[in-house]
Length: 355
Figure 1: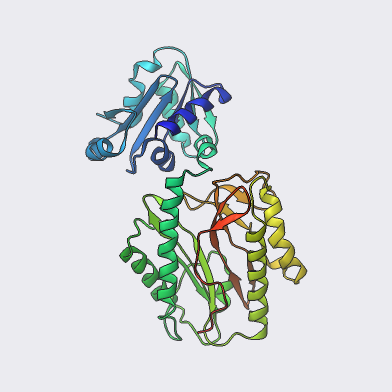
Figure 2: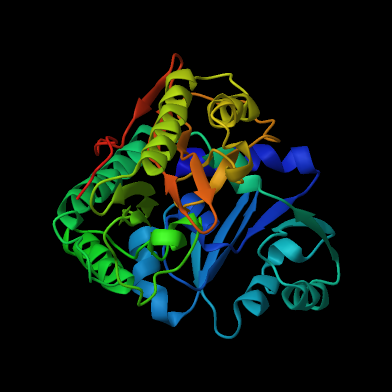
């Protein structure tokens, strides 16, 4: 945590601020180690104060190091405003994507001598490249996803509902040690598999359905993201063509991924394969995204992504083809960007599964 705090302090001058207020749960977890739901932290050149309430006293003592720990007697921001650090004129950066208008107004009233400066994605900038320990936790979360996918195949059959499959996925991830799930699992079948983020319903799986499952696990705060599409029964020619095209796009992107590559260049590798097969209009989202403490982080792998990939970044590679009134296919792996190429963490088979 000490190195992360130093990196954050080094960024203060870039934004011409004297200190930075952390309020987003992900930022607090990354910089302070705190995993509770109510806290904030002030970081300055010579200041590091963490504030929470009585409910989290023991948790903060266990998790938060390198910070002065305070238990708020009233609201967190009122306790924050009582710090002597605010006695003089200050420029305080805050997480503009997390602070509400009401909270900003409250801070303005509590800190009349302080200029509030909205800052976007400051912690995200220093957390994109993952430390070896972070990658290991992601690897463990990926291993849970892999294992649960293999287990769930035995349950898929005509007549079982999407919601039942979803419940089994979530139960089995928990049973294998996953902590709070990173997102609601997606289970869509038949024509509904053309919905990239469709939610499971009481629809029953039928013979001939494409079935897409997108789910993740969480270990030590770090997450996995996993998608596979299978066929209930034998695939027809069009289903097979869509699947093989998606797989080819996914494999070519993984083969091309490496450090210094623009995110948009990697997206283009997969998009070209799908377009040349005649399905370009049916791939409407980016190729992937970073992940770590959150399931969606920078870098964004998309046609407009201008960020260069760097060794240690962890991203998903998940092309998809979605045809309305027919169905869709998505295949997703988690990979680590290396100096030359990438390391694929996801080990589950990508061959077309026909059940």
